Each structure stands twice: as structure tokens, then as C-alpha cells.
Length: 286
Image: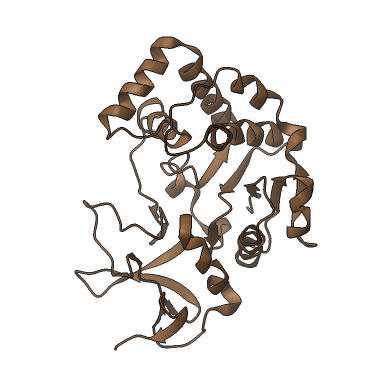
């Protein structure tokens, strides 16, 4: 069954349209939806639905009265919105009668037909990553209540601050609440995005976690290969490749998004890799 694919974004930025079109290209039978502002409606074209964020922010506004800012790396408005989007998504799903969907950040490129993935294999992945996740409406209800509790109640908020400090003085973002909710409230094991013989990318600029098999890097980013138009990464300690489900072009890596559209990836029988300095696909050594 094809689940709706939802993006939430406030600004008018070209890469958002590219990421949504890529989601539609790889998942032609899925609804692709942007919850945004009037200024970014033109990014949707004819095959992507657009809804106004302002119509689904009632419970988000209530949460904002409890929010306390503790993220020196991000400004107040940006960090608050990272929390608010989950309330917006929950209220949108309620209003549309959507019981389950996929959510992707607006700098994530999707390459797998996710309707073909085994649902059971995704159970531990749900609400693990803030930038790529399946979302069940009932679980979103739990998540929103969980987030509100941690900011509304002093003892829970102190627990949140202590957890962030113990883990390297992390900024208090929705990513921290996701870890707590996924690992402790749901008691689920981490997948690190590695599902169905492929991976949902954590960050193009980062390697795999240190206790997992490593892959080749290039220019301090994951080295991305293609064969027959399908993207892969290559393990360092063995000759095997792992399929790319998504790439997360976080931060400055957004500049590479236009080069990674499916229609711009060479469709060859031999492996090629993307050379970041030249922004060209280069034939790999046999």
C-alpha cells in the first residue's frame, strides 16, 4: 500500500522542490504533500499537493507556551519550529483521515519505492530519525504528549537537560526527544537507518556509526556509487555494496542536490561514483 509522503517547510527554496519531485519520481503511486506557506506553493507543480501550515498549528501554538530554549547552536525560532512540526503533522493527519504516512525533511532525496518495503522491517525505525521516518497517527499522539510533558513539568525538563549534558552538551532539540521516546518510552532497538538491504541516510557528511561496518568516503562525505541508475555505498572491509534508500544533504551538502536527481544519474552497467570537487559522475576502478 502506498503511504502519503509529507514534507513541512516554511521558506521558498529551490532544493525543496527538487526533493519533493524526487520523492514523486521514486514513488509515483504515493501522494506527495507539502505543508507550507503561500510563498512556496509554486514549488509543488501539478503532481504535489500543497496545504497551508497556518491551518494546522492550533496544538503547536499551545506547545509553544511551554517551550524553553536550550539550544545555543540554533536560534529560538528555528529550534522551536523543529518541535512544532510534529504537532502540525499530527493535526494535518487527523484532518485528512491519514492513519500512517512517511515524513521527510526538505533536504532528503528519496530513491526507493517505500511502498515495497516490508512493514515489519520498519517497526524499529519509526520515530528514530527526525528527518526520515514513518509516522503512525496514534504514535504521533503519544510523541506530542511526551514532548509537552518534558517542557511543561519541571522534573522532566531537568531530566532532559541532564540527558543532553551527559551526552556531550547536546543542544536540546527534537532529535534528543526522539532518542528518549524511541529508546526508552517505546523500548525499541536502534536500526541506524539500515533496513531492507539498504540505508536511510543519517547525514551525507558523516560516516556510519563507529560500531557498524564502514563505507568509503570522499571529500569528507559518503562516497556514492551508481550502477544501472541505482545508488549504492561500498563497504571498506569487503567488496559488498549497500543500497541507498535516501540521502540527507544536510547543511552545505544541499549544494549537491541538483546533481542527484534520478534523471541526472548515469544509467550504466558499470559502477560510477560522484566526484564532489568536480560535480561529475566518474567511472569507478574495476
